[in-house]
Image 1 (cartoon, rainbow, N blue to C red):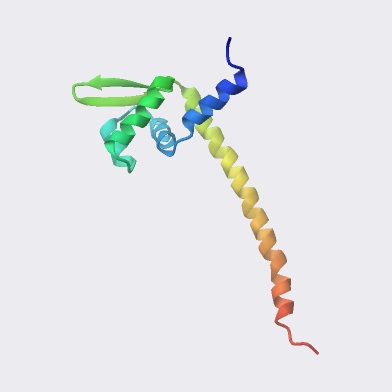
Image 2 (cartoon, rainbow, N blue to C red):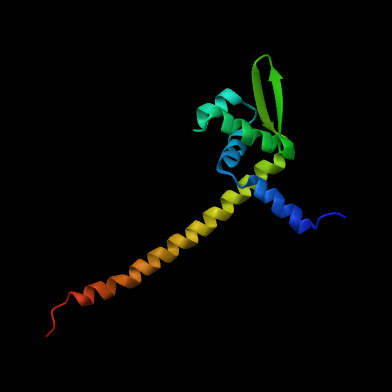
Length: 121
C-alpha cells in the first residue's frame, strides 16, 4: 500500500527541514560546488556537512561527482531551485506583512504615550 501523497509531501519537507541542507541547496543554485568550497561557506564540522549531504543525496535532490580527491555536488534538477525561490517570495511577503503590522502597532501606540505625558489642566 502506497503512502498518501500528503504524507509523502510531509516527509519531503521534513527532509528539507535542516538549516545546513537549505544552505547547501542555496549554494548549489548557481551550479556545482565542491565539498571544500561548501565547507568554506557553511560554518559546520566536515562530518556534519557530510551527513547532511548524504541525506540530500539519498533523497535524490543532489548528485555528486568525484574527480581525484575532489567531490562536487550539484542539484539533480532545477525544480529545487524554483522551490527555494518560491520559499523566498513567500517569506518576503510574510515578513513584509509583519513589518507593516509592527509599524501599525507602533503608530497606534504613539498617541497613548503622548497623552500619558501631557500635563493635566
